[in-house]
Amino acid sequence: MSNTSDHAPARQPNDLESYWLPFTPNRAFKRTPRLIASAKDMHYFTPDGRAVLDGAAGLWCTNAGHNRDPIVAAIQRQAKTLDYAPAFQFSHSQAFELASRVAALAPGDLNRVFFCNSGSEAVDTALKIALAYHHVRGEGARTRLIGRERGYHGVGFGGISVGGIVNNRKFFGSLLTGVDHLPATYSREHQAFTKGEPAWGGHLADDLERIVALHDASTIAAVIVEPMAGSTGVLPAPKGYLEKLRAICDRHGILLIYDEVITGFGRLGHAFAAERYGVTPDMITFAKGITSGSVPMGGVIVRQGLYDAFMRGPEHVIELFHGYTYSAHPLACAAGLATLDVYRDENLFGRAKALEAAFADAAMTLRALPGVLDIRTVGLAAGIDLASRPGAFGKRASEVMERCFNDEGVMVRVAGETLALSPPLIASEAQIGEIFDKMARAIKAVQK
Ligand SMILES: Cc1ncc(COP(=O)(O)O)c(C=O)c1O
Image (cartoon, rainbow, N blue to C red; front, side, top):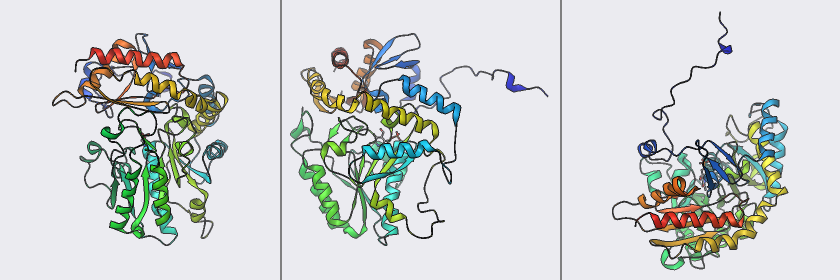
C-alpha cells in the first residue's frame, strides 16, 4: 500500500469559477478580481506587491492592525499545543481566562460570557438566551423580539428577522414570527454632516412605547439595537436615545441587547459603546475585534442575574440547550487573549478616542466634493453618502471603492451608496489624512 501522505496533494487549477463569494457581485468580481496576498499593520499587499492602506479594518475587525507579531505568535503556539478541545462537557483554561478578561472590560454586572464563532451566531445566541431567560422565570409568553429598521445583525434567521435591511430579508421567506421594528434613527434633513451623536432623534426611542401598547409588554422578550449602526452607513445613536430605550425596557421588564459586533473593542473609543453612552444593556454581543479578525470568534456577555436565573434545578442537567462545536475554540481564545494584551499595552481604545476629533475633521474635508450628500462620524468610523445615478443605486459608490483599491491604494467599504471608513485603531494621523485624501481623489474621478 502506498503511503499517499508523502505526496503533495493534487492541485486544482486556480480558476475563479468554483468559489461563490459572499455579499459580492460574483460576475463583476470575477471579471476584475481584487485579490489580497498578505498584510502587515496598516497595509494589505496585492499578489503583485502593491501596498493598499486599510481604511476599513478589513471588515470592521482588524482593530489592532494586521498580522501583529504577538497575536501571530500566540496562534502558532496554541496550534502546536492544543488544536481542539470539545466545547461541550469539556473545556480548556484559555476559555475561562478569555471570558474573565472580556467580563472585566464590560460595564456593570455584565460578567458572564458565552462564546460562539461570528457576529451572526452571537446575535442568535443573545436572542435565544432572552427567550429562554423569560421561559425559565415562568414568563414564557414573552416571545416577541424587537429590532430596528436599518439594523444589521448578521445573516442567521434570528439576525435577519430583527434586522432591518430589505435585501437581507425579502428573499428568505417568513423569517421569525413575532418580530417588530423600531424606526431607523437617521434623518438627513435633521442630522446632515454631524460629528458624533446627532442632537435630533432621541425621541424616536419613544416608539417602543407604541409597540408595547400594541403587543403588551407581557409578550415582549427583548429589544436589540446597535449603539451605532455600522453596516447601513455609520448611524450613531442620537443623544438621549439609548437612555430612553433603557428606561422603557426597565419599565416593562424587557431585556435590552446591544449588538456591539462592530462597536466592541475600541471602535468608539471605549472597550464597548455601552461605556461611551453610560447606558448599560442586559446583554452585549461581540465578534470581529475580539481577535482583531485573526481567528473567527464571537460571543455574548450577559448580566450576572440572567446567568443566575438559569443556574437552578438538578446540577447534572444542562441549563441552556445551545452551543457550537467551535465555541471557545483554542486558537480563537489564544488569539483573543493576545489581542486583548495588544489593546491594553498600546492603549488602543484610548488612542481611538484621542484620534476621534482629527478623524472627524479629516472626514469632513470631503464635504464639498461633487455628489457628497452627507458625512457622519463617530469614534474611528465615518459614513459618506453619495448621490446615486438615476436607476443605478449603489453603482457610484462601488466605482469609488474599486478606484480606491485599484488606483489609489486604499481599501474602503461600500454599502449601498454609502462609503464607510473604519481604519485599524493603530492608524497614525498622517495615515488618516492619507485615507481621506485618496478617497477625495477617487470621488472626484468617478463621474456623478
Ligand atoms: C452589528 C453586527 N452584528 C452582526 C454582524 C454579523 O457578524 P458576522 O458577519 O461575523 O456573522 C455584523 C457584521 O458586520 C454586524 O455589524
